[in-house]
Image 1 (cartoon, rainbow, N blue to C red):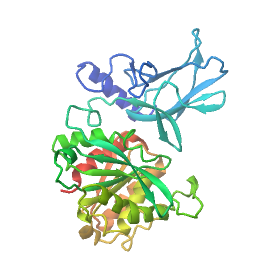
Image 2: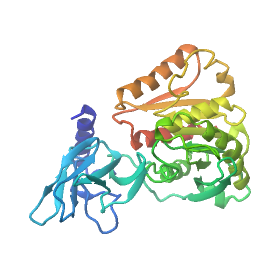
Image 3: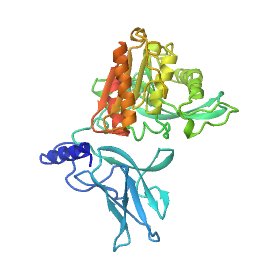
Image 4: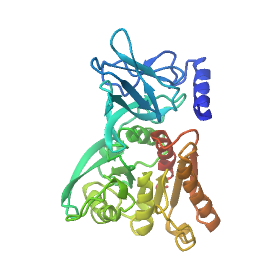
Length: 378
């Protein structure tokens, strides 16, 4: 078992003695992602999870969670059950395999990730509530559609409006364009990412400027062209064109944004981070703030020299932000860390953050947004 998982479990168990902290379990508890009335999956106090499903005619059932496969055992009651090892706190996708076919768990909500709709489980984090719903003024999330002339198709976006958008009808707001990762879509930040809770809580605490957040679908194919497919992800020229020529002006027109680069940021996770750096650095006339969570720079083959990253960026941009989880895949961690080292050596100002004990997962990105958002527009 990874040291980071053991440490998380030890911290959680130690906290249980006081039984006063948020996120501390003293008994097996249904996951918050379960459908109403469904007891399983259960999360145990040691952060392991119990899965129980009903497939009476199946010959073999397994569950894959946290990157590991667990064969399920059929009990006397006819239900299949398995218990995982302790899991890292945060959100985890998981899937069942029933007689060789991959299927979602019928007990839980479904989430879009890794190019398909699957199940999700939330493992509580001891002492942490910044992404949980609190008794504070709440903003709202709207689903907005617009017709794209460039793609000859409707595009769907999720838009967060802060509480002040309704309470202060004459006020205009800065805007953050927040992008999802590969295999996910515009729903990700609003569901898996708990964006609304994070922003509501930061704004209520006075730690963050009220802002509009636009979550675009990060894939685009120009009219008349063939889709690039999942293996051509880093060719996002079409998406950049849509963002610059249609998305940014559309939402500046629809909402009370402050429509200038000083009040416009772009950021994303994983592939969305590479998109944000590429689009943001290509268009300094549009964006004054750039961030990348578990993804930054200009994608594979990114040159990290003074021509690509001149010190003039220190005057052009208010913020370049980079983050990575300490337990990310080795190559991914090294690539992002090396960009940080290169920017340091080139004298390019930036903020670098490592999320302790997390991998390429939503807790890394929730932590990053929680740190990044308060730095904006101040």
